[in-house]
Length: 129
Image (tube, rainbow, N blue to C red; front, top):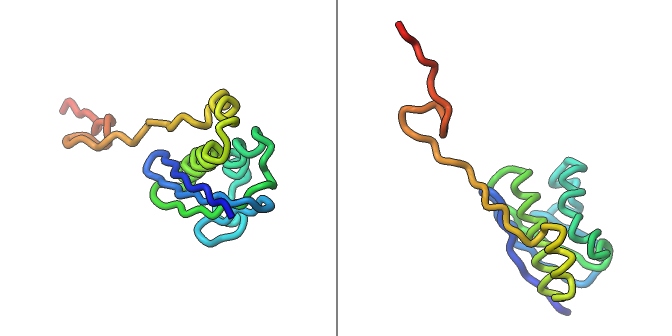
């Protein structure tokens, strides 16, 4: 049985994806189904986009370990991981996935907090007197 392994990253989240031929079952951190872990339908749709685009929604099983970041970052990391796993399976998907923007890693990270400021750029309220 072929196993395709890939990694996706987004913000502080890392998703390790194992793709095997199956019937569309996705297990995230030991929980069956995307909605059981991610809870929001929008995140589920976001994650499944590469699969629906390549018409592989019920052809592969995914076993995923995600950690770090929040739910939105984890969903983005999982989407990239799934797209890369599909690419490992077949290079024929490259053009379609590239056009959909699923192979580009989103480089935006949280900017660090600076001393003397409330957050990265927000300042404390200025008082003249």
